[in-house]
Image (cartoon, rainbow, N blue to C red; front, side):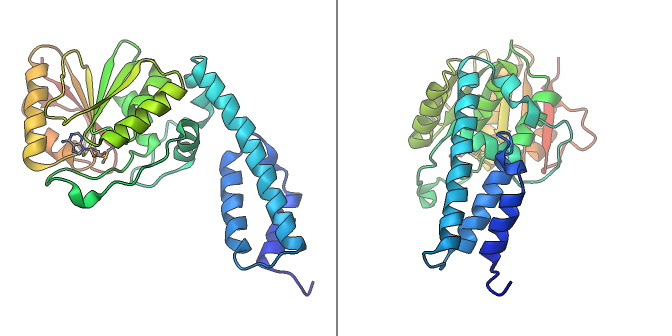
Length: 280
Ligand SMILES: C[S@@+](CC[C@H](N)C(=O)[O-])C[C@H]1O[C@@H](n2cnc3c(N)ncnc32)[C@H](O)[C@@H]1O
């Protein structure tokens, strides 16, 4: 009992617990690997270190098979079915991330490039991905389906267009001003054979909005930039019905637009998805 350490106790716990060996238990494995890495700091070579490293290798090997299988199913067009075990109908508000984000991060395998946020023009918001459960909630609330064309304004690394397409079959696009983000998103979509998902490197004020049914915005910009983009969406809404799916403070701006209506009890909510529809 004398040489029990946090690392040796964790190794014993994981050796006795078979659950992390289930292929679908990627979240338990991620958590266990984080804890092992933490407890390994400063541990000298020896039995405990060897056991911990063997456990990490075993977990990585299971993850690798699990994600290869998931990617293969996505490439075969079975993305919706492959992801369905992790899709929840109850959606917690707030900005935190959960198991679905971890799954998506490994599935899409996007390396986030370094961007100098200091060079961000005024009124434009730096990259932060929408928590995946909100994207799922947006699909449900806006009733996005295979016949829709969806545009994410300020699409960052492309999670929204990719997940929306995977879950609905809709044609999806992203417009993003950072070219390196667009390159990463395009590579990820192409590696998963998502031919109906495209990304454009442009300012959202200049991109072609023709044919778009659903506009998604996770508060990508504020002030006059948001006002200019809003005016362009309003011009599209004069031609056909459109839906606006908003997350974050931009919902307050949409809530003030007389050409939009919203049946949400709180159209200015900023910690969850709010859906607006153009008036006929
Ligand atoms: C808060 S992030 C949202 C990312 C993504 N839509 C999501 O929900 O996961 C905002 C993104 O908008 C981009 N952005 C800001 N201003 C923009 C503009 N004028 N035109 C295009 N993209 C812009 C930023 O570079 C950033 O990647």
